[in-house]
Structures are given as structure tokens and as C-alpha cells.
Image (tube, rainbow, N blue to C red; front, side, top):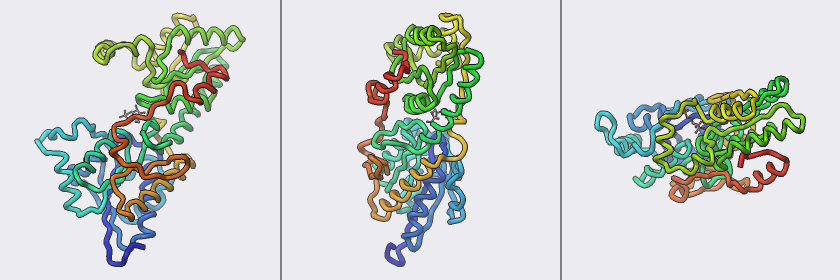
Length: 363
Ligand code: F6P
């Protein structure tokens, strides 16, 4: 217990795309504090950084954190506030960074707990540089935050993406079709890799391993020769062809302006159909992957990260992301990780093992 008479005031916000275990993580932090701090006030900011900028908040009570361990989404709401625009004034000329600082100081907060992904983390680091006491918790289904082995939301999203591919599997085999399931993950392939391996996908395409359409067609034809009439592809939404990977940023942007497909999976399906004569269909589970209840793994992860965050706040050890490294919670300085992306290593053990059992990565 902290000394009697010491009041602690913390703020909390969830920013960026939502995911399944945000509420579980906030509950972990608040339980970790309320069981160890005599006098605690928790302010919840609505809709991410927006709430902090425009002073849209509410004093939360223990009731708010009751029964939310299993609840998806976020009780605080979320929004995307791009980091690159944070230093730009809003449409009414308001200085957003100064406005956030002013809300923080007006409420006399001891610390601000920020739950979010990469972009959110960059703004969290900016606020740290501006002198605020910050604790960051790594949220994203993409699992692309540098400095932590895993982010919360990732395992829950694997379950959903995997379920989608499992369902497609039975239909693909009944109809002898080629099916593509497009998996979220932004610019990285973690979610596709894990969901693809877990569901027995035959071809897995990741942004980190640019694909050659000929290799994909070869893999489909090889399966046909082996008497397997269907093929399942797990394709990351950020998958890219070898040709496109060679283009400069400017040329790729230009090409995308004239792009006729809704997403990369439809382009690949079109090319497969033309090359093999076999019908290729696309399924996009989309935002389903961020929805519903957190899986038990994420509930445990968030309870541990939340409790560790509470301890860092009690120790006044601010400016950290609370990470999970080698099965242990760890305080990682934000300045060391903000702005870095954790990508799949194309030659990592898991890819090598997947290749060994015959999975094609289209390379
Ligand atoms: O970062 C999580 C994520 O779901 C990505 O996988 C995806 O690319 C993106 O968010 C989608 O963003 P939005 O919900 O804003 O369309």
C-alpha cells in the first residue's frame, strides 16, 4: 500500500484500431492500482487522443471495470489520430499538443496510461518528450510493436482468422476450388503467418516475402498433380509482388492510384484464374478479426501487463512500454522503441519449418 493520504490520479485512453483485449488490459491496470493505492482517481478519456485534446473525459469508478475482462472493443471508445498530424493545428487552429498537456495539468494527473499500437506509441513518446508521465501498453492484432514478443489482440485475431480459413477449407475441398482468405495485419505478416500455419493453408503470402505469381501457379499445379483439387491461400492484406517491391515509393503510389482491384487478393485471384483455368475465390473476414471476446491467452496477457503497469506507476517509473519478453513482463523505455516496426524475418525458423512441410510462400 502507498502511504496513507497520498492521492493518485491517473488518466487512461485507448487509441487507434480497437481489438479484443483493451478492456481486459485497463481492468488489469486499475485492479493492480486499486488493491495497492489507498486513494485512487481514474479519468477515462473518450475516443483516444481526441478526448485528451478536447477535454472529453469522465471520472471512472470501480463499477466501470467490473465484468469487462471478457468484453471486446473498448469502454472508452477509440479513434485514429495520425501521429504526423499531431504537431499540426486542428481545423480551428488549436495546438493539439499544448491542448493535451493542458488537460493533463488541469486534472493534475500523476500518469497517463495509453493503450495502442505503433502510431499511438509515437504520440505517447512525443508526450513523454513534452514532460508528461506516460505508460504505454502494446495493443494490436498486427503484433508489429518492436520490443515486445507479443501484443494483445494478436492471439484473439489468430483464432478468428484461423476459424475463417477452417470454414473455407471444407467448401474449397467440396468444390475443388482455389480459395484466398485475406488476413489483416497492415504492413506485416504475423497474423497471416500464424493463422495460415494453424489452419493448414497451402500457400501463405506475407509483405516481408514478395511473391512471384509463377511460383504460386506452380504450387497450385503441383497440388493438382498430386490429386489435390483445391488450394487454400492465406494472403496478408499487405502482400506485394516481386515486381511491385522493386518500385520506388513514388512509382508504387502512382500505380496504386490506377489500381482496379479492391485489394491484393483479388489481383492474385484474377491472375490464378487466368493462368490455371481454375476458379479462384476471395474471402475477406476484415474487421471480424478485431471483434468479439478476447481469447483466454489475451485475457491472461492483459491481466499480467496491466498488473505490471500498475507496479511501474506505483514505482513512478514512467516513460515505458510494458512489454512481454521471454514470458516475463518488462519495462521498455519508449524512446528505444517508438517508431520501430517488428516484422517477420523472411528466413526465421518458423518460415523454414513451414517450408519444410511443403507450404509455399510464393518466393
Ligand atoms: O492495425 C490494426 C488493423 O486492423 C490493421 O490490421 C488494418 O490494416 C487496419 O487496422 C485497418 O484499419 P481501419 O479499421 O482504420 O480500417
